[in-house]
Image (tube, rainbow, N blue to C red; front, side, top):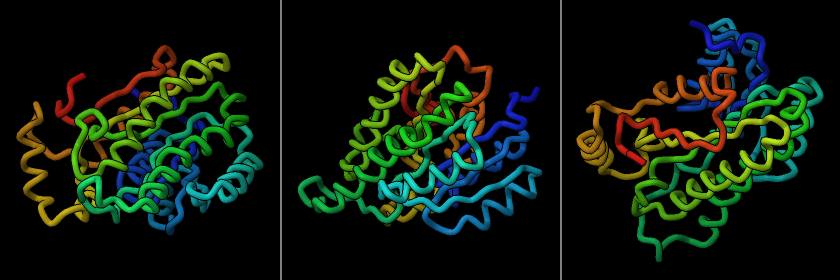
Length: 252
């Protein structure tokens, strides 16, 4: 049974790779028009979306830069005044390294917060006119690390905790416009970014799988189904919620 996304206009940030790319392909498989946003090259995602039969538009935005967000969102709205769904997936994660909190550089802390928290806020704020037209859906990608209080990446974990609070506050505020706002908390997903965090990646992944109810790796494609559901009319009554998609790693 289709989820009723055919012809919908959806914006996905962090679309160039990993979870974002898989979400774009999932929307394309269901007939949506996909607007992919990233600061890096989007050519491979665009090719995958068009191969899946979807309509594709690429927009380069640095979500850590308010001027870039404003300009990019204005361009998006000029061609797509109706935004049916916004998936805020972009985050600073790859390139970080696990370290004690007292060793986190203040500039790195600010950079994580400016991209992961402020950038998400800016994308919602600047695309709000289009979301209001559509009575659209917003899905923010948080992280199970915020539920577990994972050590070694305190700034990243704090930023993803902020996403949960932002989601619940905006669900209340934007409900007046019939806009649904929800969040997804993936587990430890097998992405290139995760593999670059530590030389102990394989050991950490093994330990994570053992802690899950279902013993298999959490892959980017696992996040797609829940995202599509939350962006569809099937989830019209669902807002302000956090969905853990992690094979039972975090139970809350």
